[in-house]
Length: 188
Image 1 (cartoon, rainbow, N blue to C red):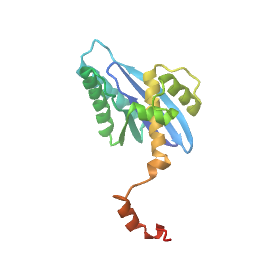
Image 2: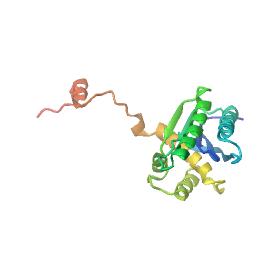
Image 3: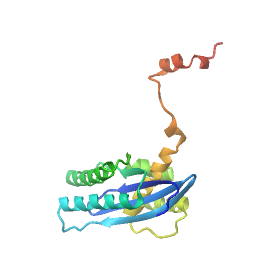
Image 4: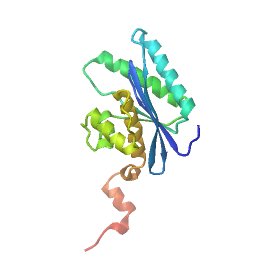
């Protein structure tokens, strides 16, 4: 596999479907490398499914050699059992990336939507349509789990290259800022 830019692996964790999207960034160009889902058998118990998630993420890492790993954080729902299962799936995927020394970043679903469409309440179809425009993709999505994972990867790229994201705050307040920047004070 020939590569020229930074590879970002995005994951949309799930206990029955885990979406994944891999992009390669070359300057301003964002290219889709792969987008798909891991379908987990409902008949297997939860630990077996977690093992399959871990194995798949390791396989993706071996094949694509990502520089960065981004994952969607679970949203807070009313069903505690579902949240626990989703959190475990997320944890296993994160552990697979961390075991290979890949930096991991989490994004809330709202942050991902905001980053891709400009609207944190956008629907899955709106997100997909924008991704098609950004990546010049004409294919139809396998599932929205796959497109969500792709959106996480693209969101991560945008966050890494955002002007706002590069601003560091070395100040503990206005007084500290003024003390460190006396030349910026205008005297009347």
